[in-house]
Amino acid sequence: MSKKKQAKAHQEDNLENVEQVLTKSEEFIETYQKQLTIGLLVIIGVIGAVMLYNRFILFPKEQEAQSQMFAGEQYFAMDSFDLALNGDGSLYLGFHAIMEDYGSTKSANLAAYYTGVSYMHLGEYEEAINYLNKFSTSDPLIEPIALGAKGDCYVELGEYEKAAKLFIEAATFKNDFSTPIHLKKAGIAYEAAGNIDKAVKSYQRVKDEFPSSAEARDIDKFIAMAKAN
Image (tube, rainbow, N blue to C red; front, side, top):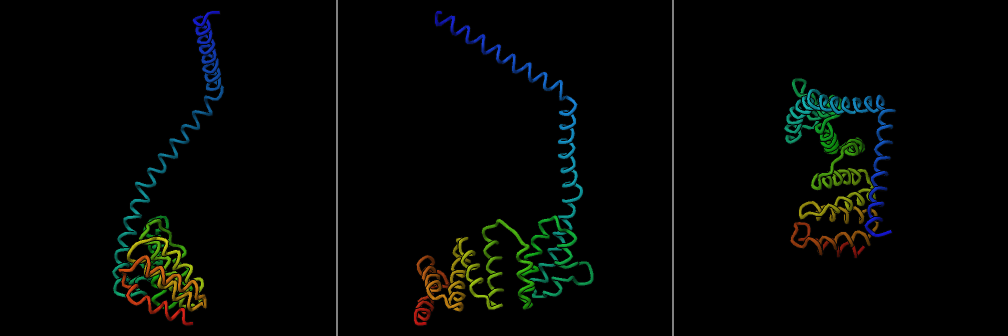
């Protein structure tokens, strides 16, 4: 058989295979047409429900929650932590109420952070850790601050090894502001825990990686004192 005839035969076989596939597809659609239609309607219904929920329920709740958060942040900035947590008995509800009433919003998540830090300032460190654990973020600037706050709470509770690990984790989010702070805090916590090698290593990182930072100005003193222990 010539190459031309072989090519023609191959083309005819391909066409026949395509026709068979199309026939099977048509048979499948005919057999399951009702189920496919129902499935499509369900998908459309779910998408529509989500859009309606976001527009008429979630978005208005988010706006209300943001309004509440603004008032709460004002009290927080004034160190009025009890008012920030529990409300002022007037229009502002408090961080606790924001978390409970607007639980599906971003503001409720942020309220968990403010609640944790408020309890930390009030000296209720275990309660602070509990709420900070409820806060989640992927922001590379906010996450290390939240981790550092938990570390501060563990320092106050005398759990220095836990605190140091949190400070080191916070330091993995590298920036010139918070990273040297957390490295130095990690060194102090490790030193308090009796882990001198890790303390010196943390201090040395401040010196080597952030020589222009405020924390580096007296870091040689911390290194020398740690080595002397």
